[in-house]
Image (tube, rainbow, N blue to C red):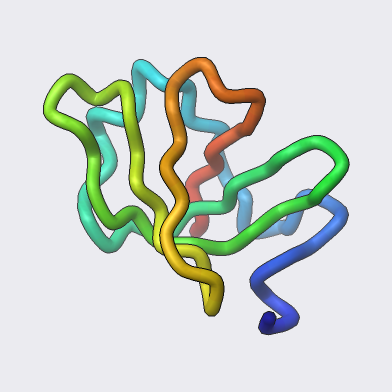
Length: 80
């Protein structure tokens, strides 16, 4: 796992928290941070947004894909 891929504290590049209703604005390849309580922040890129924008597939740096649902206890942050 790269040093950038998992951080315990909010990185400076986590510029805006994206609520599930904002996921429609994301496109494939957009850089994001995923935050999960007790785990930290993971760097990733949007791989796919579902047709109805309630699901996101995120390609995590060096760790494969992760499916995120609007009701999951995680936060999605724009990276920029």
